[in-house]
Image 1 (cartoon, one colour):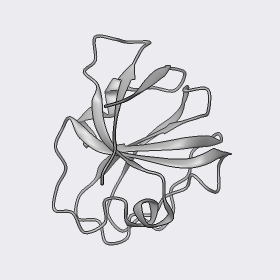
Image 2 (tube, helix red, strand yellow; image 1 turned 180 degrees about the vertical axis):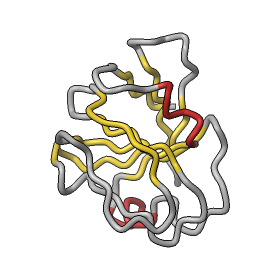
Image 3 (cartoon, one colour; image 1 turned 180 degrees about the horizontal axis):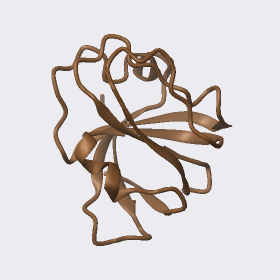
Image 4 (cartoon, helix red, strand yellow; image 1 turned 90 degrees about the vertical axis):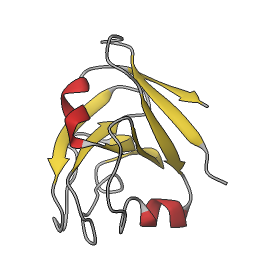
Amino acid sequence: MARWIEIQNVTDSAKPPVKARLCDTFLTRFRGLMLQKSIQEDQGILIDEKSDSIINSAIHMFFMRFPIAVIWINSSHEIVDTKIARPWIPYLAPAKPARYILETHPSRLLDYKAGDRVKLIHV
């Protein structure tokens, strides 16, 4: 059964939250958004790597059909990096260690910036 998390930017609370499917098991983290046809603007996935790391929070874009916004968040719920990821990129990592990787619609990239704090709300 899918579990959902709402990610709210508390630094800029005027921005709408993203509702993300929590990926915290090996299989859900591995699958991510691979093979999906698209993603809605207000949705995404939140990958939980359990601890802050650069290597463990790196992603790939194999078998992706569309670009995504990637927002890396550390254990203190601070955004450490953001990027647009395009299909078939083999490796994309944050500039600083992160625990969570929010993958969402590219239009949401400007809603989050390094240094912002977020709140993770189980829904």
